[in-house]
Image 1 (cartoon, rainbow, N blue to C red):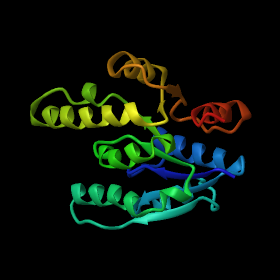
Image 2 (cartoon, rainbow, N blue to C red):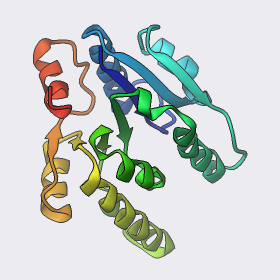
Image 3 (cartoon, helix red, strand yellow):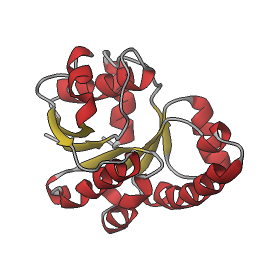
Length: 194
């Protein structure tokens, strides 16, 4: 049995593609007999249950921090206190703050999978936030280059990563899919090289 730690700091909304994708991915891994621990935000507990996440997926809930920034920083710092040696793979949904795990990925590059949900530089195009995003993108680009593999949630994101961030190992698992069939699981299996 393969042991996954799934790291995703998104606060979900019911019916969103990212919720469907996350629940589908984790349930598909569970159906294949994999062990999954999901480090999630306290705000997600009810919506994950309503969306059909298997009760066998172990939830570790992050509750620390008062401000939005503090909550996200503490969330990623919690990954440092997890026993990643006991996990075969750490599957991380890329966000502004995912670069915080770069030192862990450098120490154990064969364990980390990084998933990209979009192209942030297209989403925010001006002002101070664009400068901040450029800095975070630089650090996340380093993370992109050291992980075992990268997952894009669409072919467009896959092409952007390969064209703009260089030749990293990138596979596509389409966002918003329920991942119920064996064909869907083959995408996940390719991701982890099984």
